[in-house]
Length: 195
Image 1 (cartoon, helix red, strand yellow):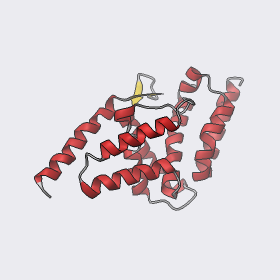
Image 2: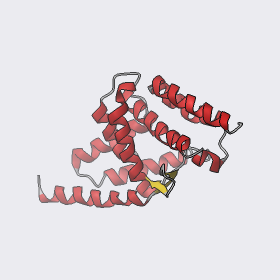
Image 3: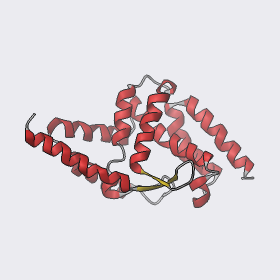
Image 4: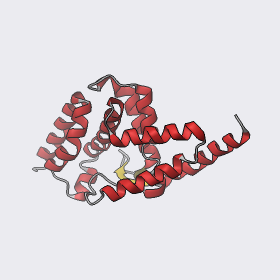
């Protein structure tokens, strides 16, 4: 390994430190503040570590963890787009892809190309690993909302039908077991609120 390669790797690591400053809508469970995107990515990696046995298909847990650790790095450039922002669409996808090219382009050679490829696989959500990673990316904020009395759902006027539509298909196709648990919690939450 050359000194130049190490310098590039360290520069990338410095650049992605900015992910700690990207504030998401979801609060911490203690509601003391909003979580940042770096915390979200770490938490999702822990979800994969503990919950991969619940995937509908055989998944490579370590690969799913790698996907989840890098999936939101693009937010360094474009910020977080909440799931309830229905106005975000293809233009957001283009911005995120450009951010991925820039950021993973900071990593030298094959290492950067592999990270970009893995990020694009996550975004496409076609492989079993990517489907499961996407599902976990929906499960975590859903569970946060349940533990914070509706959290961002209440803030954004989200209905039971919207939760079922926006979270359900992504989670259910990758893990019917996780979706069954989530759906039960969601229905109980909205029933308790009279929705």
